[in-house]
Image (cartoon, rainbow, N blue to C red; front, side, top):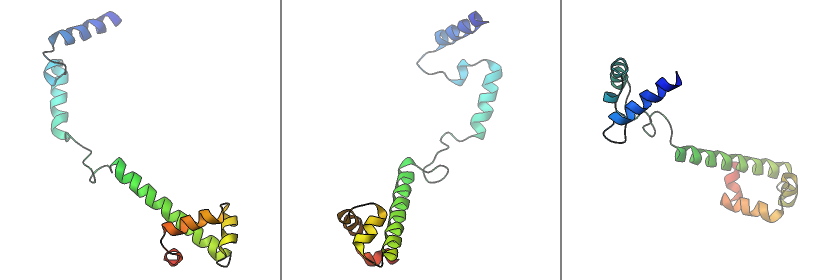
Length: 114
């Protein structure tokens, strides 16, 4: 059984004119299936934005979601601390300077209320 498969592989390689296996190199019964499936399926099914989102779009969405979550966490901590930034930072487990850096990312504390 293994020898038969090896002979088929060798025969296929000997029949190839280039480095690619094409439909014409397949047995006839598989050629018909390949022809039918190539008609029914598009060559490039992953058109960006139509069928599958690109990796870059997924990464951008993830970053936006994480920023929004961080923004909401900071707003909640500030509300719970009565807008005392030192207490809010302690509640979040970060330093006051780290909280200020995060707040500057959002431009102003007022943007946290949006």
